[in-house]
Image (cartoon, rainbow, N blue to C red; front, side):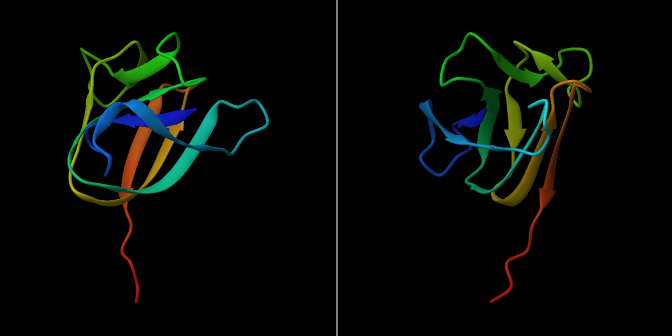
Length: 96
């Protein structure tokens, strides 16, 4: 699973950043990532065959083949749960 889109520092839709599986069934994934502002989606196997985005009726829900998810500039802990159809972007502060 990877996060991909214009909201990433490289700002492109061709190459994503791999996420870490946090469940044995590969339904829960997470990554701590810096975002530049823009839109993102999630996809599997570096292809657009399996991808998830925001729901049309409820943009807070993760939906197969859903729309782009807007993200503000900043560093976030991103979590997705494919089985529960949820995603979250939790701001992370950087301590120096």
